[in-house]
Amino acid sequence: MIRSYSTSFGLATRMFPARCRTDIGTIYALVRVADEIVDGTAGEAGLDASTQRRALDELEAETERAVASGFSANLVVHAFAEVARRARIEPELTRDFFASMRRDLDEVAFDEEEYRRYVHGSAEVVGLMCLRVFLAGRAPTPDAEAVLEEGAARLGAAFQKVNFLRDLGHDRAELSRSYLPELREHGLTEASKAAVVADIRSDLDAARAAVRVLPGDCRRPVLLATAFFAELLRRIERTPAEQLAARRISVPNAVKLALAARWRLLPVGGRR
Image (cartoon, rainbow, N blue to C red; front, side, top):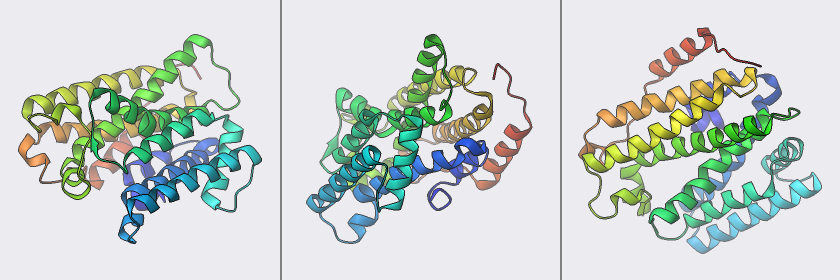
């Protein structure tokens, strides 16, 4: 599923240690299935919004039952339940995630409060789920845990906000959605784009600061994923605002491979 949907995340996850590589992929799989209900193949199959909502509600209910019982006949849900039980992923995280996915089925033109709530549920909680996997069987100090929680949430938020800018044209033209509150009045201008970019850079800086507290075997892949999105952000920043709505910016595979090679070779210091 990762290979089909995300070359960036696919490359980064291959660098995770065996102890958590499959678990991170499993979190991605559940997130992707939910996203397809509200954004992708469900609509292409002709499901209307109310039917998509029922399908999403059923997926959430099945996920909660599976986490409680340890079993589901749905293989993706069953795998996620095993991860959630082992890594102690709290039900509040999955509930907030499904709430944000459900929000996509209504008109999207967020104010600042709606935007923060949506980013938390759609992205920050995914970062926190991954953090639970990284820390499984480990007990960081309260101070270290606080740094890691903030870093994981803000990295997830940064990834989502980059996607908002990259997918601006598609979201508006195909889905009639406007996620970024900065664009409500005047659309995307150089000034509004700069404000969003600065916000994302702040999130990425906070995330990088937290990496030094991660278990040593997880730092390099997290930094690589960060590097992929930082490169995408640089390309978006260099693209004139009026062009972002017309074309989707991406990072060429050759550049991704070069970044992957670089991060495999660079030492990553700090305590394990």
